[in-house]
Length: 343
Image (cartoon, rainbow, N blue to C red; front, side, top):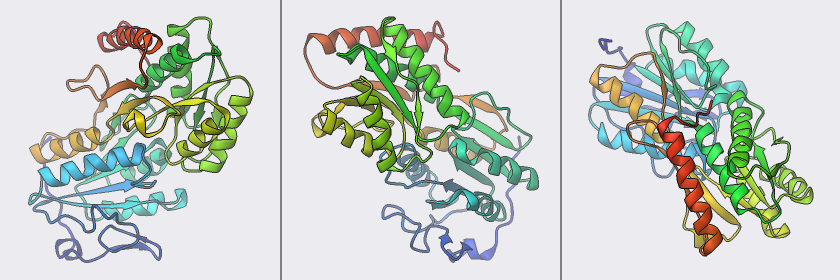
């Protein structure tokens, strides 16, 4: 697809703050911007706007994506102007996307919770390119909307397998941030992974907190699962995973963290971490825009992609962990080859 630069308002070219609402500003205006990225990057002929509905320091999906944002801004400094907004309420998604669409060549939204809004806005701005990262895995792109799947299903499968292999009670559970299609699917793949690793494991019914960032409610969900006999939990949460860690510490349980991995010595309640580089999709979208080869496509990243962006790190040492790692390596290889498929 040939690239035709869009004309941008002088406000962006001069770095002037663009207000979305009284309390919702593009980065560079204070408030919503992060300490690492205090102003929109200077750019050339192209503009990219990114909607981060959550916190850039959530130690999860949004922070992983933001790392890719920073890498892309550094790599394309001087040719692409980047702007972003974070911690946006659901009622404001559409307005934020519209504001970006009025000046950007490419608008990127993070998370399946933005799916309805980005589809609606993309239809209103047919000459602007849009990309959604982490939406429904089986959704179809539209004429100007690309869909990038970070394969959270693969990560959830591996997390389920790890949880089952490391469980001493043969009972595991899963806590999701919201009952969205991608998260419901992740819960199913967590169960499939657990049963593939240990057919005798009991997988409790998944729990959905209703908010990816609510640590208190996540803690209550985790306490319920630990109370029901689980000793290792999987999760797809942002800030909410801190609540599970608190519950685990109080009940002698553990959890599988991610998508960002940490030094295992940092917190003993983590049985391991699934790693998913959400930011790689943001870099991919920007790279394609710069090359002039961007197209409205559906791209599945993960273990089968040219550069895999999913992995799993186990914490601890000893024979049980070594045996678990061996089984997980075999399952990972089957996922990468397509012998095991996730949806």
